[in-house]
Length: 312
Image (tube, rainbow, N blue to C red):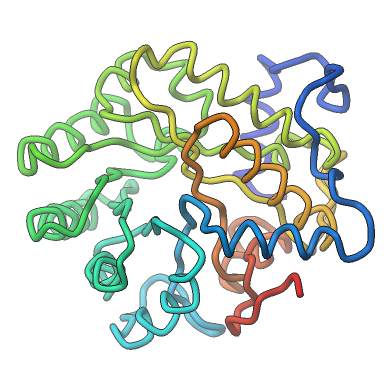
């Protein structure tokens, strides 16, 4: 199993949101099993998309591609045009190797952007990423600049190192909200981080906490509630949440077409009703991710790797 999955399960369950993720309080929001009749889930999800969801995580990579190669602007545009009718925002993850074109293309398509600056333990690469993100933001293509994604979760950087990157970005683009993305409990554990961010961007994955699908939306709502309790008056945004359609079960969390479809329905509806902005993960299946997350890594998209909608 991936480091990501092991860390999520071990760290977050050590201070579990409730004693048993298989349990759900009476009257709480329905879980992923809320639209179980044949055909109903597909229609409901399509309806939600046609009404436009707040946001989606965007990846430009085709089969056989992965980070480390240069992505052409034409490919970015082609992929983003598939999503444009169904979302208001896109979230990007890098500002190098062609990805720096994504925010401008999104703006040309009428979309808002959460622009990601990919940080790691490679300090030289971090400088290139940060410079790219600042350039994108100065050009007016970033509605939120997200400096780093899960670097504390992975242990790539210290808190002080991360805070320095965030502050450098804020000094460079003072008129753009600057924040950081990580698992919800990281913000609960690090008040200095929460204070440094203009908005609190949390990744919420009931799947990686071994939560059964039928209770997953309620479990996600508790992740949000727990973060809101430490956020003060700052907006809490779900920067990632999703469910895989294929792969190996992780504890009580089972990948399947039905569970992924119904989790998407439940999560999007819950966020809309609760007034919480949500970026669904993900836009497209990404074959390159099997190395990082095991076999489930390739199957989180609402569209497959060829750009075909998966839930017709």
